[in-house]
Image (cartoon, rainbow, N blue to C red):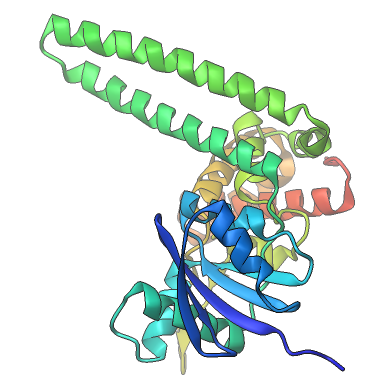
Amino acid sequence: MTIAPSKIGIDISKAWLDIFDATTGRASRIANAPVEIEAFLASLPEVSCLAFEATGPHDTALRQALSKPSLRSARLNPARVREYARYKGFLAKTDAIDARILAMMACEVEFGLDQVYDTGREALAALHRRRDQLVDQRAAERTRIADAPDQRERESLKRHMAFLDGEIATIEAEIEALLEQPAFAAKVAILRSLKGVGPVTATTLLALLPELGTLSHKAIAALAGLAPFNCDSGKFRGQRHIRGGRARVRRALYMAALNAIRAIPRFKDQYTAIAARSGVRKVGVVAVARKLLVTLNAMLREGKPFAA
């Protein structure tokens, strides 16, 4: 006999988790702490499916605890959850309502199941995030120093920039050491075999796009926000535009595409043809970025380096 899975929605905040079980109609709240979460998961039926929103660091304890094979989980885009709530007529927003909506989504909406919590990848993502923060701070200070009228202000800015340089170097050394571990070394070698993919792009893809090498070319392009979507109605045929996706991944691929256009004739020819046809150079670069991502996806899936 097949047991129907229990559908559970979990709304996550910094202090607690609001839970709604669509099977029993029961709502509850527990503290967002490892001990309470593990006790809650242990009390669930043998077969359960949990849906929750991606909430940055606040969902870490829950994701770490979701290790039982019978507990299937899905980490959903908050924007998608909000659109579903509006479709269902939920205009009010509270933690309890959000938990109920997530439980409804678990029952009605088909979605891919989230990957198992990977300690190594999470550490890489944290280091990558911290490097981005420091680089942004350094860029802001560099902008300020150009307009600083006072000598003492400029000296302060220089000292802070020197400090940021040291911190960035430290973080980059930690990232490099992490990428030398067996879990990443082979993937890094495959990604870096394509000219144009530097250390930052490779780190960004491994940290923020763990699905790379496991999805179809259309799915991976949509996930990175590089898939052109139609805008047609009746006889009207609108322009195709990219939308959504993971902005940081898309930005890294855009910069890699600029390098690939200079280094690889195949990508240069594609860029030239599309830029000439569209009349917009940026359209050509975005097209190359999408082709670059599709190529890297195939390379990782097959475990083969780039063949020029």
